[in-house]
Amino acid sequence: MSDPRASLRLGSEPAFPCDETSGGGASHAFGITHLGMSKREYLAALMLQGMLSADVVGDRNLADHIGWAKTAVRFADALLLELAE
Picture (cartoon, rainbow, N blue to C red):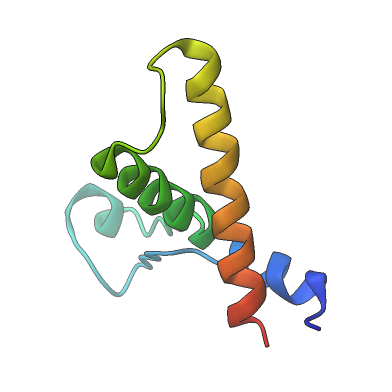
């Protein structure tokens, strides 16, 4: 079984990092490093997008939205745990 700390470490890494040597525009001119969203956030968003596009999420009320988000995060965490092996 994977170490959950490895999953946490992998999930906190930036999904789309940008440093001063790439990109351009104002952030490049000022030498700002922008790490963007985490891999965990990105994967959770993809999971939620898939759930919504497949229309498998049931009723469309606010309480369900919170449940969908929590489920998407659990799926993202499971994927990160598997990738950490």
